[in-house]
Length: 203
Image (cartoon, rainbow, N blue to C red; front, side):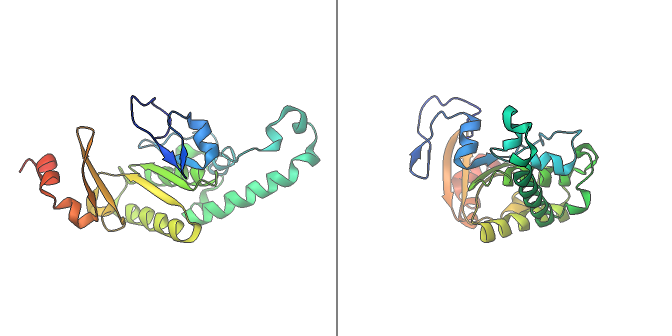
């Protein structure tokens, strides 16, 4: 779905458009962004800089325009203001000037989410956003995801194994085993489905 692997079969649609086999950068410009289970940040850049690199179509990155500051200065200011709003929404505003490698594990997850938000994506694919995160911050991360969904109209597709935390926040759940969908529906229905219980608990 994210373009990192070429499909052997099947079809992927986004907003009624066939995006099967599209490359990651093409999906990014269509409004799909993702995060990784192990954060893939620019470690020596600051928190703010990590967000700014994700801004689309920055005119200051074009060789000709880069030489003429007046042609990109306003856009750069807008991007910085946008990044500041995102950092505040994620609770990272106090760390804006820290190098990414100095953040805690949970903060790294939030920063990667923030970088995805800089793309103005309408669909965010999150790979285990609370993996390795302490329970308090894990609940905070999911609360922020819900707020973003409700206030910004963003859809989230989340892969997560910490069901004790995630089930309190999701409205629809799919369970897979051996590459096949075995149950789909409301969380409480899926976790009690006999096929899911057998696949994951062996009972």
